[in-house]
Amino acid sequence: MNPDTVIDAVSGVFMVTGALMSLAAAIGLLRFPDLMSRMHAATKPQVLGLFLLLAALGLQMRTWSVWPVLLVAWLFQLLTVPVSAHMVGRAGYRTKHLHPELLSSDELEAIVQRAAQKAARQAATHGADDDEAGR
Amino acid sequence: MNRKRISLRQELPLLVWLVFVWGALWQNFSPGNLLFGALIAVLVARIFYLPPVELGGRFNVLRAVPFALVFLGKVVAASFQVMYLAVVRGPDVVSAIVAVPLRSHSDLLVTATGHVISLIPGSLVVEVDRSTSTLYIHGINVRNAEDAAKLRKEVRDTEAGLIRIMGTRDELSALTQEIAA
Image 1 (tube, helix red, strand yellow):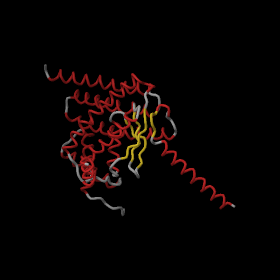
Image 2 (cartoon, chains in turn purple, cyan):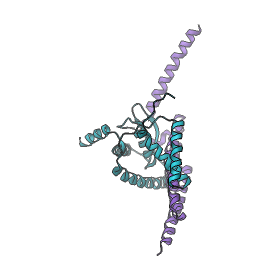
Image 3 (tube, one colour):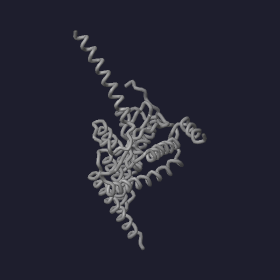
Image 4 (spheres, one colour):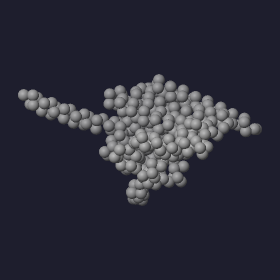
């Protein structure tokens, strides 16, 4: 077996698996019930899918000089995907885009409610102060 | 500009990274190109000055390589897990939000732990409490307290691995004491 055939076979497997991962992400977005479980589908298979496709690309180009740029592309993906997932998840939680009946436990709820009550109380006292100043 | 300058040694990892990106984008690692890249890196670091990242002062390569390989393996496992859940469970999947207090209070370690956790099986950072360095994590397919405990252990173990790689000496000795106890 010559090396070319092996490289072609490996990159073929990588490409098919990578495409499968993107498909998994799409199925997840469609089938999961709420925003945060959809974010799981949008992060993990997507990162692996991109890794496999970039690796297949690197193997097919047959030159070492493309590997660093592919690595940089993937590293930036690793750095940005969790941040965007966190921002969307956080915004989704705060605007109550979730189904509490699908959570087996929620250790954040009490803390968020306490913070909201504190903010409301502060707003109320400040409001009263303003009223007195107005009189 | 009267802001405090940071030492070159502290800035070096950033400069090396910028030069590497420059070389990678040009797909040219010849000395001339790298030298020009270094010049631009220094200029960029001076003009667009950002608060320096506080490094722990040590980096253990021998720990980092196995950690990176295990991480890659976990990304693969996570992807297949999400694929399985998406196809088989779909709308009936049950999740939980779990609070995990971390050992370290360094921004870098909390960020790194959050990043790694978001990419390995079944977890996503929803909220960070910086004052107590607690991560609130959305775990997919967490059905009972046992699963939640497993998730919490996973996060703590990830943080321990990161402390072994790049935590400060104090954090490392605290960790070894905790494990010995």
